[in-house]
Length: 393
Ligand SMILES: [Zn+2]
Image 1 (cartoon, rainbow, N blue to C red):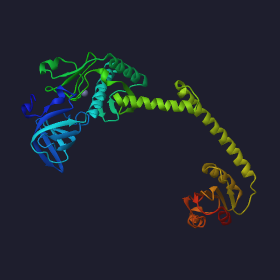
Image 2: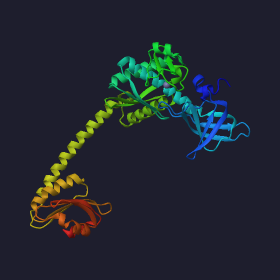
Image 3: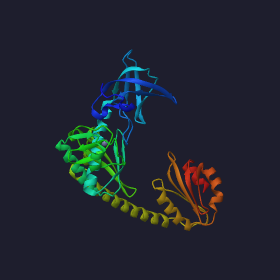
Image 4: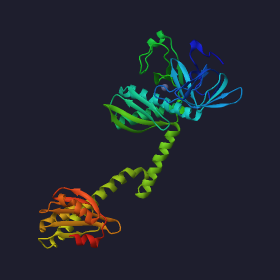
């Protein structure tokens, strides 16, 4: 082991070798804190939760007796890295193993985010003001509005650099060297600033592990974007998640293509056509429904008593329109029902003379129903059979 516990701070293997999956180290201390055990090592390859990237997980194995401890999380405090373990870890030599599959995908996504933010900055003057990475997606906030076309331009530029297989390097410049550098940074730091460079394309201050070359990012896809706090919030994915998102999108396109009998490249046009046709059909059926309601109302003879209407297939809104017009023809209550004895009935009661609000409890009791409204109209559901409902009115 080299350079461990320099300046009393946990040595960070991931700074020099982000690909280190397991490492040897010594347990300095383990303290219980609120039911958790915080284990301090002299060196570690576990990246802590920092800068929007979650911490690594994995195991610590005691060399002396091969006892395994799960590392749920790693937290930074004053430059020291504390490994949250499920039980107390005794002092001694250990072998740490990180869950590298997860870490590698995070490195791919994080490196992709650098390129994306870099191009958003150079192409459109945007500053990254928010970043959050989890194992499903990367969320990035920019301070300016980006159009759909601008996002496509950024996405293309990023993928061109991915294909170029550009080296990604990191280093700690001296303060004087740092002062001369032009780099992106969220914080105004002057010392211990780690610079991550992607060839000529981006230079950014960042403490996290990244992949060694852009080709490892695989692909970057912007999955969605919204206007957010006067700027843009977008979600992007790289690596396996980009493949997953692309595959999912293609499967959906294939399904839509098959259902609408359209070429995969023309599914958007086919969906727009389908929606337009559906709207036209809806308008036609609404016109037919209105014509039916008019005919139905005409067929009702005026009466001083009640009117009861059963229209099993009408929707509630159409039933309400029908009952409202028919109510003009009666001196009592106009009662309308849609539904069936099996599935229950929806009712609409309208009257120009009876205070229905006052009668609601009694009527609901008789109809074995529930509902309410105003003195002019009440509506709800009823479980009584048609024969009983008919008799009530
Ligand atoms: Zn980074």
